[in-house]
Length: 229
Image (cartoon, rainbow, N blue to C red; front, side, top):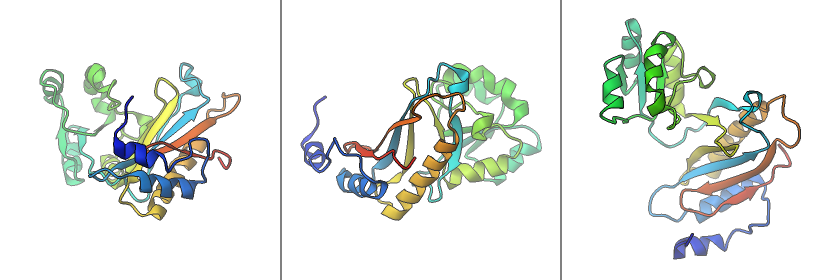
């Protein structure tokens, strides 16, 4: 893969053989985020899990203390008085059965997170083939299948993010924007890592966290020391 001049310049600042302490890694990632837009800072965690085994799957959610810096659009599947509750809590879209053809046939996906009340999961289940591959399927472990739609919406809008293994057993999560102060990025990083350390599957033998890399949208990866985790 050929990289542009800017990337090559910033990549020189990073020693690919070094595992940096968290604070140094965050400072370096901010320094290498030189795009013309406010880049997202992401964490990529390679685990020793084997996601093919159910008991080694990792999935959950955590509210980042300083949010993600992104405006999140929430779609809620609900009925009855839960529709009014969701609207009052600030959901961007609320509906039921009538949204199925809009999503399935018209390819409408103007939302970032889907919340559903348990009694609507039969309806939402029909969208599995569309929402599943995009990681948008509501899930009780992530707190997105719930009767407490107000709490779910408030948490999401405040900066709640989901973490899960991809097919290569890596977890990818945003922890904020390049414009965030270093302390805020550190607080978000710590909150995420605490949740992931707690989520370690008891069935796992061997090393849990194999590598942690921080990177901005367009910048080079910076390795973080796994020693303290």
